[in-house]
Image (cartoon, rainbow, N blue to C red):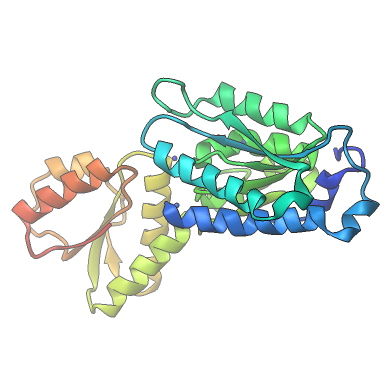
Length: 287
């Protein structure tokens, strides 16, 4: 794949939420925003001073181009559906779309994400910030939304350090100004994948494996977590987690019966699967 309370507003009603990928995400987002809309539309909302505008705003920061364009469109549609299904009684809730990726490639852009978060954080009408898709982008916007007391919803930001200790230095406190937690995670953290894979491998009766990564922080983090989880289950694992390029280029006389690989792209997973199938067809792959 780094995180003042505003004047009395709806923002302060939702900032107390704490957060501990993709058709499925759309349903989760719809459910979450139905709840948000319910909260802002119920009778108790009359106790909260309304913003000067006629509408409260839900902001999404998602890419319109690139490999995540389809998923982003589904999530945006889910937000619109959740709002429309509440009927005409909640006309004051609107969905504001911010472009969350490069206009040509859809790739993440740190300056753009920072700008989006700042725009949302300084608008007293905004009650929730949805996105971005990646953990890296979330690490840029989260300190801004946290400082503003603005609810941020992570769709596919699975880096454990956003909410848990034990990953990168200073995490997760560096994302939250003054210790305020404002992040809701809709996808399980990466470490759970590694722990489940270690348990599955153990259940098969295998006692030796190798964990490899592709160089990304996502892949390295999960490979290391798998290493820890497998060793705790008595599984012999390579003490040094090799990069996939090194593993594919090596000549292995005694390959491990199982390989764990948390690929950051489908192509990386395909390359490894083809190579292993040709070199050692009996090896089990955990991808």
